[in-house]
Image (cartoon, rainbow, N blue to C red; front, top):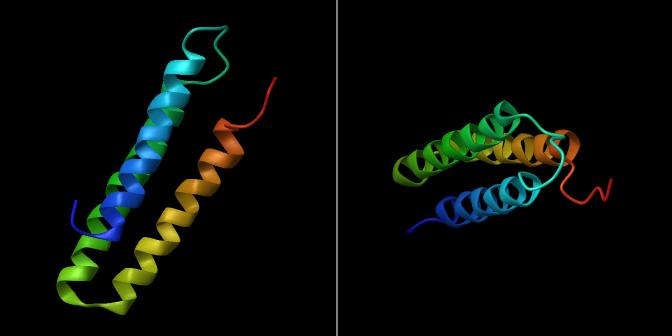
Length: 85
């Protein structure tokens, strides 16, 4: 846990775990593949971000931030963590 990317992606992944465990107790409304897409998004974001820190490459930073934003948008739109239905 050395870079901001480590912290952001681990916190996001922990939130995914909590959401998955919470929703696994009731009637199924999500599919496992949806969580896998979000988890892979976190992992790839972390990898690209850490490589950007090592290489001090602004283009990689922009890619990591864009992918993290897309991952958060996917979670928000598809998994709908704050939807009470």
